[in-house]
Image (cartoon, rainbow, N blue to C red; front, side, top):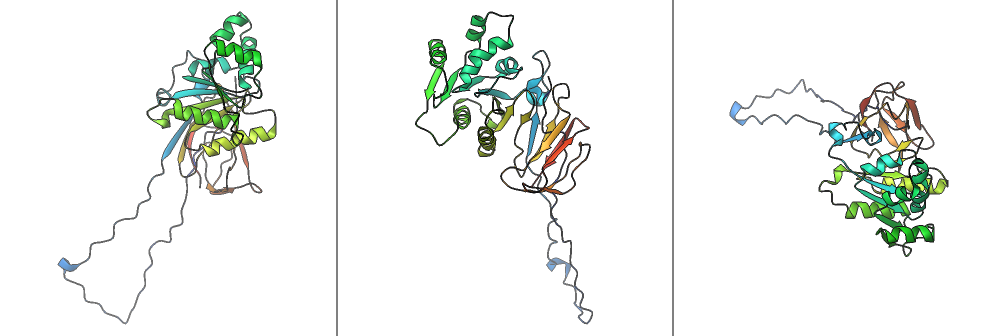
Length: 295
């Protein structure tokens, strides 16, 4: 299986440096102070390194594959929305510590998992792939699906009173609040069904990435993966060439990216500004990992 992804980038933020300024007064003679009274030299100016974030799609590798060291500490949660399940849904279900269906996403699991595992008995598949939680405004889930999972012990949370947030927003908020992960930087939320269907729903799902910018969230389909690169970070992105590529895209969300420089792409960016109405970047890559910083 192959999916597109952001990745394989090295970039850095550059800031203007005016350098030292020297002013000479030829007609003025100054006597040096005694050494004991000489003021200490000013401390050297240093640029503090930006905090780093690492991104990897190792969760798409077959279960028999040994995960890379930086993936071993990651805790995965899975959120399923109301679109067709991608072919790797059973793999991600097995990796997740918590599985949450957003309203009609429960229909997709009920119908779609047996279709992805056609050699197995559908009743056995449905019993095995039972969501831990179904959450949302309950306007899409079929009554028989709701009853089936309720009888199996799934926690069903009706939030029809909240019409100001999307089902994905509700599920991400629930996961970040309820999943006991001591270090939230080790939490990664994988989202199935966020792409495809209505465009306004897709944009709402992308907005959730921006709303929860301190949480690693990956939107996945059979064709691509999408994740946010927060500002004022360096980003090390590892590409698993056996399951993704060969293209990536960089899209500024929430505001312009004033300066982006990359390596690892076939055609790199060099202190390039990106914005809606200006450049939106889509490029093939040539290397396997890299760094990105943007402002």
